[in-house]
Image (cartoon, rainbow, N blue to C red; front, side, top):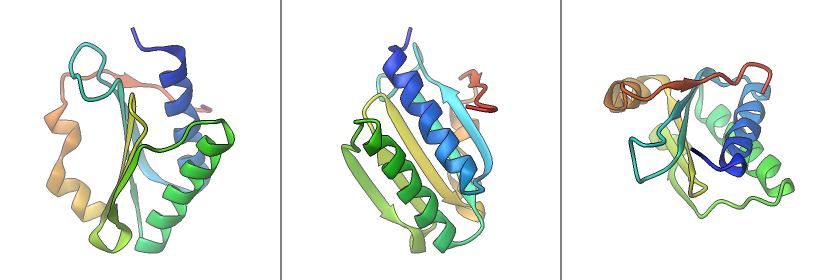
Amino acid sequence: MASTSAERTVRLAAQAAMEKKAVDLVVLDLQGLSGVADFFLVCSAQSSTQLDTIADAIQGVLKGAGVRARHREGTAQSGWLLLDYGDVVVHLFAEGTREFYALERLWGDAPVLSVEGA
């Protein structure tokens, strides 16, 4: 079972992404399926500017909650950004890039955590 802090982190990140109009946001619950993280937040953006905006919003909200990213990888121009918070990993994609990586298919056994109104 995930720590309440991991679930709180992913819910805060999801809310920040939704406020910046992230597209097709999904939170995969990887508990018991992966040693990498407890949750993957996966979402898309319609432009590189929006990718940066979503990433900055997530980092700002989580920093305000006392949670700092361990690592940030990728660039908006590449179509993929990763924010690593340890138990929570955020994957931000341009729409075509997301189809290429197909994380939802790769982790198809993972239940989806509902974050509506996170």
